[in-house]
Length: 164
Image (cartoon, rainbow, N blue to C red; front, side, top):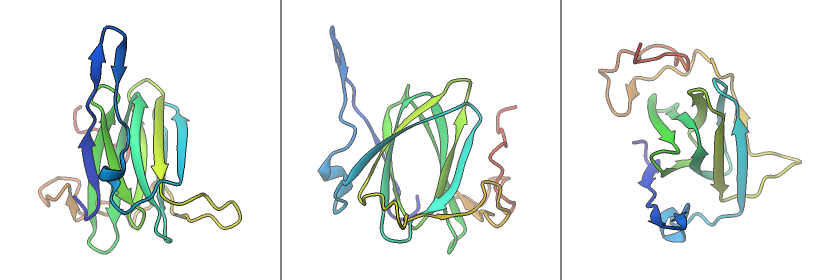
């Protein structure tokens, strides 16, 4: 994983009433103090990418419904992390804002995503730098730590399906 990118399984505590799970805890996020919680619904097949935060924002993502492919890309090392998040296998993913990141909704269901951030959104001067979802300069040399992935050395293709 890129330095600071972390995945954490979420434990469901179930009984006859339903279940309970912790989505984020202070001891999981270290020095990141939570300032805001956001919720988005995204339609099947939609790509929301690429953006990064240049003033220290860190995002903590949890998928509540559906499935997404979440990616983080480091311009300096050309390393890309690709993480599949589904509501069936609960986990949270922490992405430091200096990495370009985004996601694509997988499958036929809407994705319900909640994310916690350590900086308040500044409406007058947002901490977001953007590039197109299909930017050809996002060209990973490593994917999840491997140079053996056939997608290495090519512009990132959100539409690529490894299981055809």
